[in-house]
Each structure stands twice: as structure tokens, then as C-alpha cells.
Length: 202
Image 1 (cartoon, rainbow, N blue to C red):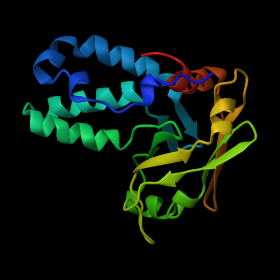
Image 2: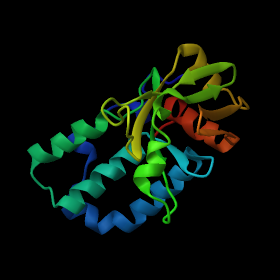
Image 3: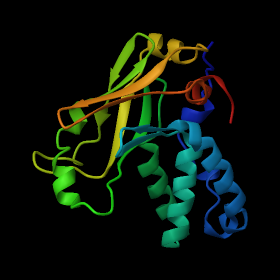
């Protein structure tokens, strides 16, 4: 049964954010905790693409780190950052992820990224029998270039969400770009972590 609260996909509020002064004292422990939570949410697809599924935990960490790095302390600015990151929050009817293109250090990034133009039309998440094609954030790729960091969203029907929250449902991600064809099968730990966004508690 899906929780009506769905704590890990509801928007972040100002009350959730500690800010640089308080965060500094808890940063090391908090980062270790969230990094451990993120581990099963990261899928490596082939030799240069990875996908990290986001939720309130992962996005809260990103906000705190951004505020710390930029020394942002004013409420108005903090709320602006929260608004930006809330756009990446998964919802009751969509999963959200950050896609990273990680290139070897000895290649020309412009050339190698150029080979992956059009990737935004070739990423599919499979949850049991449900094939969910990724919708990429507009403006991060053109006809001749693509950003190494992409924000993607997978539409999640009630049926697909039910499959996600059913133990043992197979999950995989496939990329069928002409220059990059790989797929990876997720572990049950990954499925359980994503399902917890809808059935668990914070």
C-alpha cells in the first residue's frame, strides 16, 4: 500500500534546512549518512554514464552543501535555492534522477560529448513490464552539444509505482543511443530504496 504522506517525495521547506552555521557542526556525520543512502540509488550504465535517483535526503544534502560553499545565509536566498532543488524532487507520479557523463581524463571532452548528442531520446527505465522513457530537462543539450550533467524524470503510473513497491520486481536501465548501447540491472537493494520513497518514512 502506498503511503499518503510519501515523506521522501514531498517538497523541501525552509524548516528542513539548517543553514551554514548549524550545518557546519553536523556536516561530516550527515554527509556520511546520506552518501551511504545514495549508494544503492546510483546505477553505472556502461563505461561513462551513471544515474543517481534523487529524493528529499539527497536534495537536502545538495542544498546544505551549496549554502555552505556559497556562504548563503539570508532567508530569501535560501528559499530561492530550495525552490531550485525542489524542481528535481520526485513526485507521486514521477521518479527523478541526475545523469552524469563521466569521461576519461585523456580524451577531448568536446569531441566525446559530441558523440553522445541525442542521448536524451535514448534512456529507458524498466520496472517489471513497464518501460518509462526519460524526460530530460530542457536546455541542457542542443543539436551539436550536450551537458555532462543532466536532470531527468521518469513518468510513474500508478501501475508502475505498484510494481516498484512490490518486492522482487526487476528493475533495469537501458541506453540505446547509436554510439552508446548499454543496459544495467538494478539490485533488489536499489528497488527497495526507491520504493521506500513511497512506502517508508524519513
